[in-house]
Image (cartoon, one colour):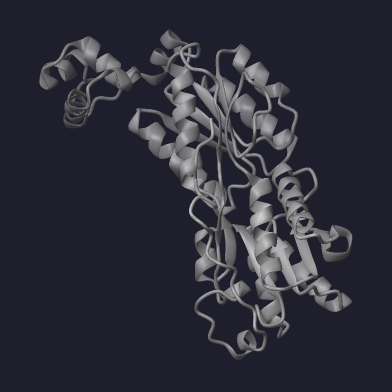
Amino acid sequence: MGTVSIKEVARLARVSPGTVSNVLNRPERVAPTTRERVRQAIRELGFVRHGSASTLRAGHSRTIGLSVMDIGNPFFTDVAAGAEDVASDLGYAVILGNSAGTRSKEERNLLVFAEQRVRGVLITPSDEALGPLDGLRERGISVVLVDHPAHRPDLCSVTVDDVAGGRLAVAHLLDLGVRRIGYLTGPRTIRQCLDRGRGAGQALAAAGLDPETVLETVEAPAMTARAGQETAERLIASGRLPEAIFCANDLLALGVLRGLLQAGVGVPGDVALIGYDDIDFAAASAVSLSSVRQPTYRLGQIAAELLLEECGDPGAHAHRQIVFQPELVVRESTGGPGRTSATTRRRALTCSPAPKPGDATLKEIR
């Protein structure tokens, strides 16, 4: 079978060759019913366009780049899924890059994206230096920050209020009556960890408590389950185990949970535990994990929508910084519903009152 042409696709779909071209390159300009008819004709005929040629003509490809800090973290997997679904619906493919939280790998990702003539880039920066992103924009590549505030009016961003999330977590622990809290955080270079710690301090201040005496911050070398378990083992060995532990993400918390249970420490009977992100594993763990929920899939969706708006016409839309509000999810690890074990009943930990309407929503603030 010979090479199928755009004209043959147009003939089968009963549209003009220009409409087929729009479906391939600017699908948002074509009515959904017509777009589907053309795509059906493409499938029937087995049409494959010459990607390199179309990229050369347009100066860019039908791809966007996504650089995340840790693809092994389910948080970023969900973000990527949301972005990919939006991109796919509009005829774009997503190139995924994992920076592992390092500047060198992040810069390599950006170089690959530029070499591939991506239309735009979604990125969770490894640090606060955004200079390399300006270089992309000078090349005509649109950029949207994900899970990182822009702090400048010429960039779009989609993030969650991590300070509010830290407040939610520690206020909940204080409601349980605990007065010795450990905050297990990741490397100090990670902005999200710092903001969640700030929120924890604000919750203590609001309760009239001195953070210096109530809160002990422990820094893990990585935000992984292994790092969480190793930290829990060190705390147990040192005899410095607090009444409650707030972890900067759920992977750390799941590692802490494993370390505590293996040492015979009851959760929440001896130590209350809360994580951050509310990944799927949080509800399915041996002791279901209380957590601060982020709308991860929605973050990816909105970020991709903003990016593709800019790709279509960078000057047509004001740069927007969208902030979602987190939500407290109370489960067994802080004495929530479903307590069954004897260790859990050893301590009369009570749940905080249910949040009032509007306290924990996913409102977009523009």
